[in-house]
Length: 130
Picture (cartoon, one colour):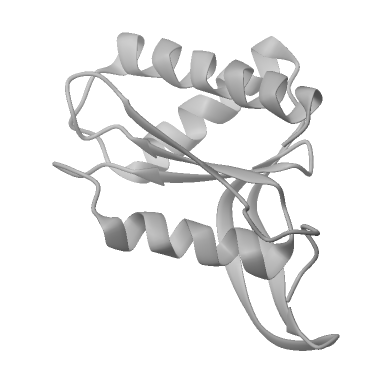
């Protein structure tokens, strides 16, 4: 993860805390996703909502998934509104990172009184899709 990716990550985390402080807990995931999009617009952060990403294997497309948010083509953001995050959620995001080659991702859980943030870094050596 380079310095720019870190800055993007920190800005997104700041937006997540702003949304959490203003809305609190108790809404569905799509409410937080939409609120984050509004905050990103205010902060002038480039993003794609519900972005379809392909999974490749040996240069061939073998599947696809839809990311909640992709920020500046370097950060996947997965939004949850749960009592707590589990290792399953972390594994899911890590698989997305490895499959797409993106350098980092954030799990944002708005299901608690204060947003829970987990930052994951793609440990795949060359950050290219598998």
